[in-house]
Length: 246
Picture 1 (cartoon, one colour):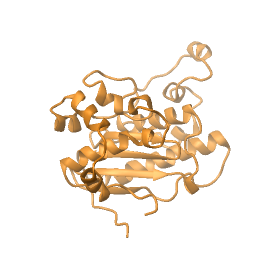
Picture 2 (tube, helix red, strand yellow):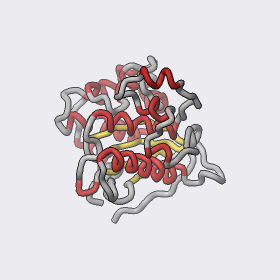
Picture 3 (cartoon, rainbow, N blue to C red):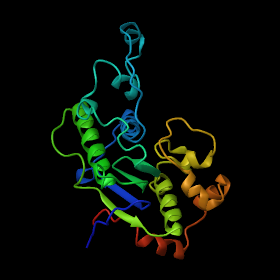
Picture 4 (cartoon, rainbow, N blue to C red):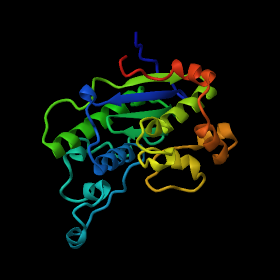
């Protein structure tokens, strides 16, 4: 039986959700990009900036979601939550993430709770889910829920398990046969780890916590990710991996 954990400061949680009836929640590249920009909106925030009429006329039709959001014609997703900009900055850190065609994984650390955000993961997931669902339904002219129920979450209770869950999240695309190497999948934060301490484009994650378990050595983390799973590795993961059928 699935039991949702309690949330507390410094807790680390594996969070998962998928599309209703296993349907795709990302149909094209811009969907992945827009979802990641929604994460950026809540976790970091966009600077308040107005785009001049002259510049708007010069921008390409396929401009980024963050640029389009700052224009007068705001997409339905951001008009749904105009006060959420940077709302979770300082409250949550995304240590690892991977966006897959019909599901996603997050590894989230709670930095602090407050009277206004006593359950920051619950609030974060609710706002991300609603915001992206609005955008997706608007873009594809559909009605109804996008995700198969509420997200699943499990607390990770040791540094060793944190390491293994991060690895599991990062190798999802290779396990699914989407790419040959984890770093070839641009919709995870694996390159924040492999290229550390260089700042990678579109970074919304905080790799330093987990890399600290590898002496801040990105090569050690790469070796760990690329090593073959042992029986003991699988046993460590079994209690914190999320069964989609739960």
